[in-house]
Image (tube, rainbow, N blue to C red):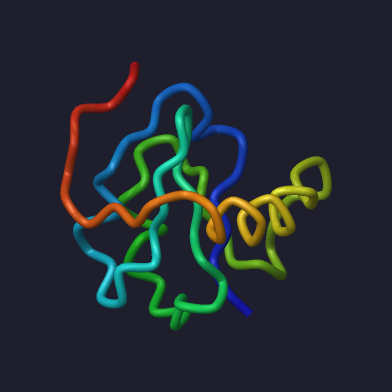
Length: 90
C-alpha cells in the first residue's frame, strides 16, 4: 500500500509534503503532485503537511477519488522526481 495524492492538489501544487518525505517518492506533474507507490514506505509524514488535505492512505481514499490510485501510479512512471520546496501554483 501507499499514500495517494488526490484532486484537491490539482491547481495548487503545494510542496510542503515533498520536503518531509524520507524516500523521495513525490513526482511533479504540470498541475499537481503524485506519489510513486513503488517508493512510498507508508511513513505518514506527508499527510499532515498538505495544506489542502489531498493526501490519503490508499485504503482511505474517498470513493469519488478512487481513480487517483491508478493515476498516481501512472504519472509516477512518467513525471520527474521533486525533492525541494517550490512556490505553489495558487
